[in-house]
Amino acid sequence: MKQIRTRFAPSPTGFLHVGGLRTALYNYLFAKKNGGKFLLRIEDTDQNRIVEGAVENLISTLNWSGVDYDEGPYKEGDYGPYIQSQRLEIYKKHARQLVESGNAYQCFCTHERLEQVRAKQIEMHLPPSYDRLCRSLNPEQVIEKLNNNTPHVIRMKIPLIGETIFEDVVRGKVSIANKILDDQVIIKTDGFPTYHLAVVVDDHFMEISHVIRGEEWLPSTPKHILLYNFFGWEVPLFAHLPLLLNPDKSKLSKRQGDVAVEDFRAKGFLKESIINFIALLGWHPSDDREIFSFDELINEFTLERIGKSGAIFNIEKLQWLNQQHIRKLSAEEIFILLRNEFDKEGWLKYPEDYILKVINLMKERVLVLTDFVNLCKYFYEEPNSFTEESILKNWKDDTVNTIKSFVAELEKITDFTSVKIEESLKLFAVNIQVKPGIIINPLRLLISGTNVGPSVFHMAELLGKTKVLARINFGIQKLSSK
Image 1 (cartoon, rainbow, N blue to C red):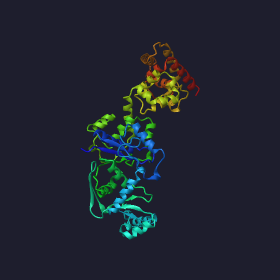
Image 2: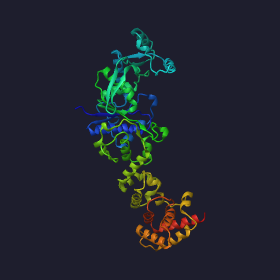
Image 3: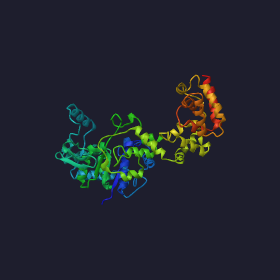
Image 4: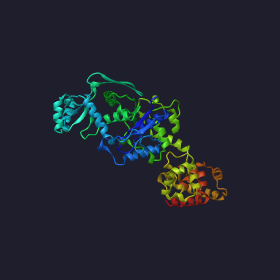
């Protein structure tokens, strides 16, 4: 059987979109599931859109996510080069072949003329397309214009009758009437190919067996199949992935918020949860499982389980998955991931054992890795202020006397453990006939400076008796002066 070969072919126009990572992931999973190869190809023929450093960023993000390619830039195989701007002579050669075989032609129309044609078609409520003026030029006219160095493009000569039919793994049988297809430009005036020629030539010579790409390329597929037929090449199998949508069903875009993989990485999302989440955007497993490791995704993945409908990008679902994957990590693994962040905060001066205890205490409560920094400052720094909201919620007129009385009970505890602290607080609450929360909530505020967090008893044990009493006394003075 022919080896499975898939590819991810992004343009170097900026950061890697989560939709791009999904495309790469599905290609990767399918290749690995079937013992095949996964390629990275950089499609940089549109020189005006190139962003400096984008290729390096793409590769770095793919490496970070674990979607490692077998062949591509810096991993040269037998089918390179894998950057399209380094393959221009290949495209020009095949464009000439199409012209010589009568399947393409030179078009000398100016930009101004094309705009006039387009405006008139719009005025007549017709779909904008090239009017094929240069398709009818005779050989002498073409030679004359070429001899005069008249700027030109090369266009496909689309059949005017019949239809192009192909089988899409996701969408089934697709049929498009040729008459509605435009005579697509395949070589621009600058000598660079358009996507349509380059992708077909590259996929053929790189022996790509399955083209797995976004739904936005579905309308272009008939043109690509015609090119395969013009050259007499075998057509790969196509699978067009559903769109990624916002909760309001609009297309996921930068205007609605974060869409770059780097955005989510910076916010503390694990690569495991991002991969898990993206895998489920359009694909479903054979059972009701939602949490997958990378190896489990490889074992389970099939193209046949990709749906046609747009997939909703639900940030709450991503946060939940991230929480589940964080809980599966040990405190030591989390410490390694956050070591640089802890260093920036100046927290590595604390014993590693103490930091690991903080991580274990908070692990069930965080959503993202950055929570281990943003929500845990009071374990490393003295709280010196309190928000008005937390004061109004937890500090009443009689609170100060209640807490002062409880401090006397805390001072009596010799074995300052969470169990003993809890026992003391509950007994004190019974004696003064109040609910434990009347004491717990202001106690948390004084110790941590916040009104949320882990068990106040475990928090107090970890901080230690001396520090807890000092913070309570400082807080009482601060709040009593308000």
